[in-house]
Each structure stands twice: as C-alpha cells, then as structure tokens.
Length: 180
Length: 423
Image (cartoon, rainbow over all chains, first blue to last red; front, side, top):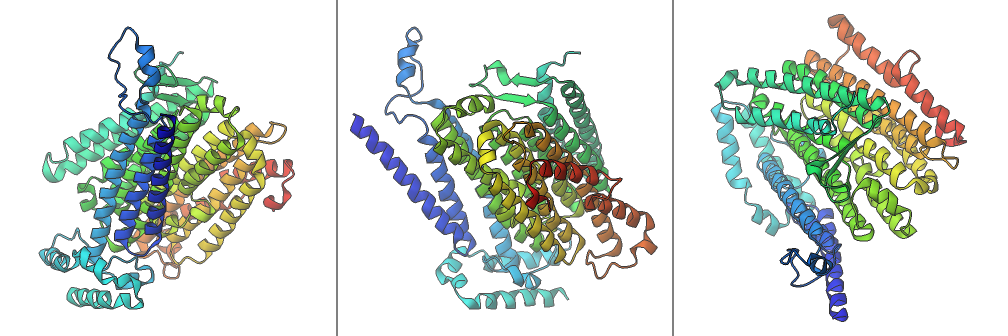
C-alpha cells in the first residue's frame, strides 16, 4: 500500500513537471496558437499540483456517511479543499482561455497573421470595428473568411521564417488602399 | 461607535450589485440607456466612497474589522480583514474612481459606452476592493482574477489593432503572474496546511527555510509581476497607452498599486526574516526598476507612453520601501512601510491626475506626440497649469505631496545606512 501511494505521488509529480515544461516551451515559441496551448497546459499543470497538495487517496470521497462516527472517516477520506480550489481555478482558467482565444482570433482577423507584429504595427489594418458604416463591416467579414483558417498557418509554419511579413504587407496595404 | 463587522462586505457588494443592475437593464430605453448607466455609476461610486470612508475612520481609531463569511470559523471559512492600511487603500481607490467617472462621461465614445464600459469599471473596483480586504491567499488569487478579467476587457474594449496587440502581452504576463500566485497558494496549503494569512504567519515560524524561501520567491514573482518590477514590467509600457484616456487613468492610478499593496501586506507579515536577508536583492531590483523606468520614459514619443513608463520607476521607490520595511531592530517595520504607504497614496493621485491631464491634452491637440503639441499654454492655459502642478508634485518639489513621500522614503533609507540606493 505504501509503495503504491509513493508511485502515485511520483507519477503526479512527473506529470506536473512534464506539463509545466511543455507549457513553458510552447509559451516561449513564436505563434499565438502555441501560446494558447502553452497557457492551457501550464494551468493544467498547476491544477494537478493543487490536487497533489492533499493526501492522495483512492475510493475515499469526502462524504460523511455515518454521522455518529465521523472522526474515523474524516481521517481517511480525501481532502475536499484542494478539489474546491481546483474547481475554482478551472473555471477561472477556462474563462481566461476563452478570452485569449477571442483576442488572438480578433488579431488574426485584423492583421492576417498570428505572429506578434511588434515593429510592423504601422502596417496593421486600422479599421475601427465600431464604425457603424456598412462597408467597414463587410471588409472585416471578407478578410475574416480568409484569415480565420488557423490550421493553415500552423501547417505553413510561416512564423518560423523571416519573410513572415510578406502576406501581411499585402493584406495591410490592400486595406489601406480600400479605405482611401 | 461599534461598526458591525459585516459592514466590510459592502465594499464588494456595492460595486457588484450596481454592475449587475446595469447589465440587467442594459437594453432598457435604447439610446437613453447611457444616461441611466451613468446615473447608476455615480450612485455606486458615491456609495463606495462612503463605505471606504466609514472603514477608514473606523480603522484609524485603532480598530480592526474581521468578518467570517457565512460565520464559518477562521482557518476554514473565508475571512475578510480591514485595518488602517486597508482603509487608506480603499479610500484612495474610491476617490480616484469617483473622479474618473465624470472624466469618462466627458471623454468616452458612445460605442464603448454601449458595450458595457460602465459595468466593467464597477467590476474592476469590486476586484480591487476584494484584493484589499482578502484575508487568505486563495481569495487574493480570486480577487486578482476578477480585477484582471475586467481590466483585460477594459483594455481591449473597442478592439483597435494597438489595443489588441498591447492586450495580448498584458493578458499573457498577468496570467502567468496569476498562475504563479496559484502555485504559491497550492504550495502553502500543501506544506503548511492553511491558506489564511494569520494562520500562515503563525505556522511560518516552524516551517523550514527552504519552504519559506520557495513561498516568498513565488509570491514575490506573482505580486511583483502585477506591480511591474524590474524584470517583469514589459506588459505595462506596451499596453497602457492603447485604450482611451479614462481607462489609462484608471489603470495607471490603481492597478500596479494593488500589486504593491499585496507585497506590503504579505511580506512583512509572512517573511519578516527573509526581508532582512533579501534586503540587498530587493534594493538591486528597486534600483534597476527606478533606473530603467526613467530611462525608458525619456525615450517615449507621446505623453501617455511617457507616463506609463514612468509608473515603473515609481514602483521602484515603493519596492525600496519594502527593503527597509523590516530592520534588525524591528523599528523599521512601521517607519519604512509608512514612508512607502505615503508614497503609494501620493503616486496614485498624482499619476491619475497626470494621466487625465495627458489624455485631455491628447483630445485637445489631436495628438499626444510631444513634438506636435507645442502651444498648449496659449490654447488651454488652465489645462497646461494643471498638468504642470501635477508634474511638479511627481517630481517631488517642496510644497507638493511628492516631496513628503520622497523625503520620508529617503530619510528612512539613510537612517538604516543604505546610502548607495538613496543616492
């Protein structure tokens, strides 16, 4: 029994370490999709770490069946607090992930690239999305059709090359011309 | 007069209730709904200021407010705590928000108002207030997330390319800081078996040095990331100048100071011995933060970019106060932090004033570019004078609040024989 618990803890530690390492690696890479995946893995790692802060028990839910002798069952059952913490953390990280996905896809629609542009900012599409005129909305919708194909960007690995700006130059300039 | 301890929950309940009201009636009366939202916002910030002032006057008499939510006893339930420092921070924040609200009415565009700008302000206030009164590590994390989530949306509301670009950096680095804080909470629970600050402080004495160092390091990274200290400040100058001026004023005055407040709150309480041990490290970080903040500010082309970068150097001063918070004689505990708190409050007000004035300059002259806005004194003498007064206070010239703040900080630093950082 002792050995099996140690093995569980060891497994948990290894999984947390792997997830955290992979997450950090993905966050440090270029490309926003990897960033999202990395953040997801990182928060999973921390959720598991929280899970490991309680005693690792099996088949002992924190439910008191026998109210008369509850002290015995309390000593053996799983710690409910880490579970509550994880639940809260999962909800929060879910919301955050949803937000950052929207942010990245929004940027994808605006710039036609999922790479952090930095000094390319002047070439960005400067349309005001809250502009009520119809032409702006149509332009944004039209560009979104092409630009939302995230998988293609992943496969092309455009962001690993120096010529990353090329498709996006054309895109940005087109928009500027259309605006004028 | 005895204040019921449940009064403290109003600091969170008031902004939350009014934000919910605004959202519930957000489709009512069509275009004229903005007027309704503005009325609700004014009511909410006034009530919030009232609550904060009550807490401040009550705690300044030497009282402490401790309330157990749901009346669950201390280490198990959720505790909210307020002392004088909490009262000061609550009041400063409430005052700033009450000042920024009319500024936002004047400067905010219709579309952002329709997309929930005003409820978001209240959610931000709710998160900030919650962080000020949180009595345990996990609730601090939750309140940080509430604050961050509303600040994310406020920052990117409008979705212009610059906002989105700055927003992604802001979101990423703040999320990582939050996850670090969550790790610290998990580690604290796993090693010490509690999350309550007071309980943690009790058990910290028995904990081995390795665990204390680990927790302190994680928390320093987490809170320092929010406060924009030296190696973790990159999100701030790339994002703060992108939203409309009212949002920048709100962020510049309040958000980084919440990180500083939590540093002030947790470190002297949980790790007094480590503060002495790490004094040199904290001073090095503070010095680098100050220097890089100022050097970066010099290079900025527009008013709000300059002011955002300058926030970083001011955070350096606040971190310096943390370095002298605890001395060997234990005398520094009150004085070092007191100087830091004076400086934090001074900086909250002055930075917001400058951000608001800078935003007004941008709106008036059509550009915030420093080379294009000459001749402001001729066009708007009052605005120019106001900016000048606030900038004087920021520089710390004698009759202003900045003088008192910097003087007390330097006095305490020199008093503890740390000449090289005081310069």
